[in-house]
Length: 448
Ligand code: SF4
Image (cartoon, rainbow, N blue to C red):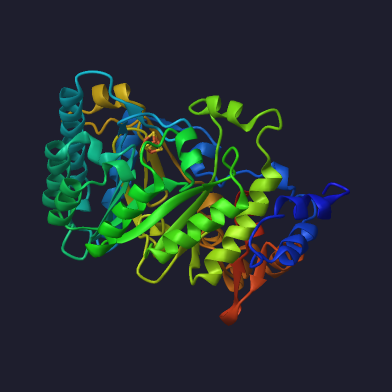
């Protein structure tokens, strides 16, 4: 912590609303001790990002089919579909998504045909087609940008080939600009009930900087219309954007909550080769992780005050927002992931798809175009439920006791309590604080 830490904190929040509890933020910041350094935040990583694949694509397909043959057909499964197309590439975007420069319609058709083929193949693996689907979640990209016809074909392929009955939560990620009335009609007809809108910020100057063409008033109007159609609506907001102030983030949350939004996912801007150019907008000071940490602290205070509960380390929800895709591991489900770069898991076997061109040329009548896969080791298997608990934001100590032993758990919980990463709740549970959300990746590394 800088020597003049208190001054830095007060300066940062100098025009924030008085409801922000600066003392609480100061306490939590002061509680942090090595190894928890704000500037060394690492996001939680899935197993396939922590170590290399052990099988190539076709070996992974063999392995995953064997795994599927052994899994009880009563075990639930969620479905994730990645559609990488967007109208424009936003300056801040780190997702695997791109603009189709030519032959839009043919490319959309080719991609939907590959997804249909892939769905059909999976539905014949083991007894996957009997297993109850909890949610079908479309992410990207801007899934609707593929066009109504191609989108309809994908939805139909999943409905027909898998056990996706009336109880399924059909969910879609989208920008507000793709959320027009015909799009909403289409989603309603197809049974979609949850829409996750990438708002990022409602401050118009910031939206311009992010190359978001719709002004905040239009975004809000579209969100209201979507909610009026009885859709559950959640939003993505980014904290720590260039020139963003805590006041503007807090105001965004208040306005969105007042308009009926059911859930908030909060993200710091991750810099990668896909969005490196945005760094110039931070000016000579560069990206400031300490300011991001302060913003997350303040944002969590505001969301709690507005009645949202942390349901994932980075998601806050009211009751209606069940967010079934991101919580599938908590329910002990598998995940069937379809499409380019999508990663899925069956039992302890993880697989991933390659980038777009390789995916399109790889999918055939006998192969779902996988890039590779790997099996969790016995040790990773043993620890996986604890990782899930950390990410869920609710840690049951008895589960840690059982897996890590009483002594190690006591030492870890002591360290996490002293650093204010968790706080005790009822029923032997400990809840992740805002600091805990910031250090969720570090906490996972500690148990692995
Ligand atoms: S932020 Fe959303 S709309 Fe913008 S490029 Fe990324 S995925 Fe596409």
